[in-house]
Amino acid sequence: MNRIIAGTIKARQLVDPNRYGRSDRSAMGRWFWEIDRVLLLLIAVLIGIGLIAVAAASPAVAERYSGGTVHLNSLHYFYRQLLWIAISLPVMILISMMSRERARRLSLLGAVICMVALVFVPIIGPEVNGAKRWIGFGFAQFQPSEFLKPFFVVALAWLLSLRETDKSLPVFAISGLLTGLIAVMLMRQPDFGSTIIFGSVWVALLALGGVKLRTLGILAGGAVVAVILAYLFYSVATTRINAFLFGEGDTFQVDNALRTLTAGGLFGMGPGGGTRKFGLPEPHTDYIFSVIGEEFGLIACLAIALLYLAIVVRVLVKLLDEENLFAILAGAGLVIEFGLQALINMAVNVQLAPSKGMTLPFISYGGSSMLALSIGMGLLLAFTRRNPYLARSPYVVKWSGDCLPD
Picture 1 (cartoon, rainbow, N blue to C red):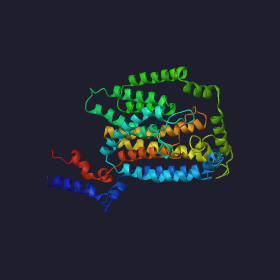
Picture 2 (tube, rainbow, N blue to C red):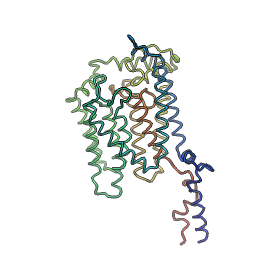
Picture 3 (cartoon, rainbow, N blue to C red):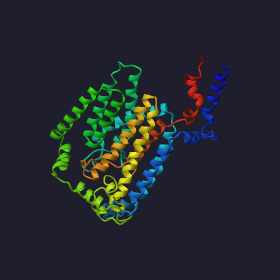
Picture 4 (cartoon, helix red, strand yellow):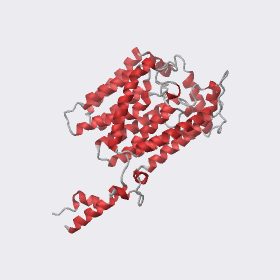
C-alpha cells in the first residue's frame, strides 16, 4: 500500500501543470510543451509559401486594378498580406492557448453571431462578381461564411457529442436542420462551394459520431438527388456544371488557369518570370495555385499538395489516442474542412472540378480568409494539445488499475 501511495504522489508531481515546460511555469511555457509543434511548423511553412506566392501574383493583380488616378505598387497585395498575417497569427496563438471548454464556448458564440450575419448578407451586402458574400463597409468588410466554417464545425461536434450521455437526444436531426438552414442561406449568395464543404463535414461527423451505415447510405443517395435538383433548378449550379462537363458557356477562367499552371513545366520559370499570370482573373486568390505552377513548377505544386495531406494525416493520427468524443469530432471536423477547401481549390485549378471561387488555405491572399483560417487552426491546436507527461508517466498507467491490490 505504501508503494501505491508513493506512486500516486509521484504521478501528481509529474502532471503538475506548474512543471510544464520543464522549469518554465509561465502560460507560454506550458503552451509550448503541450502544443503539437509539428503541426504548428507545418502551418508556418504554409504561411511562408503563401507569402512567396502572393508576392509572385501581386504584380499581375496590381496591373489589373491600376488605371486612371489609381496606381498600385507591384507588391501592394504582398504588403497587405503581411499586415493580415501580423493580425492573424497572434489570434491563432491566443486561441490555441485556450482550454477546450473555453474554445467550445467561443465557437458556440461565434457560430450564433456568424449565422445572424449570414442572414443579412443578401440584404445589405455589396455585390462582387455577381455574388453577395460580404458584409460591412470599406476596410471593415468581412465574409461571414468563412468565419462560420470553424465555429460551426466545433458547435456541430459539441451537439453530436451530447448523444454520448443521452441516446434519446435527436442530435442527428437537429444537426441536419442547422446544416440545411446554412445551405439555404449560402445558396442565396450564391456560394455553392461552401455549401458543399458544410454538407460534407456534417456527413463526416455523422459517420464519426456513430450513425448507422444505412443512414449514411440514405444521405449519400440524398446528396446525389440534391446535386441533380440543383443542376435542374439552380442556375448557378447549371452554369458551372455545364461549363465543367460540356465546355458550355464561359470557360476562360478554368482553361487559362490550367494553361498557366502547366506553362512552367516541372521546375517553373523562376520567381517573377511568369507571364500567363497577367491573364488570370484572380491570380492572387482563386487561381494562385496556377501562378505557383507557372513560376515554381509542377514539383512545387506537388509539394504543396503533400503538405496539406501531411497536416490532415498528422491530426487524424494524433486523434487516434484521444478518448474524448467531443475533441475527436471537433479536431477531425476542423481538419477535414481545411483539407476539403484545399482539395477543391487545387481541383478547380487542374480542371477536375467546376469553378467555386474558393481560396487556397493560408496561401491565397485575403483578410477574411487568413483570419478565419487562423481561428480554425487555433481551435484545432487547442483541441490537440496534450500534457506530454501524462502519456509518458508509468505511474499514471499504474494508477489506472494495475497497481491496485488483489
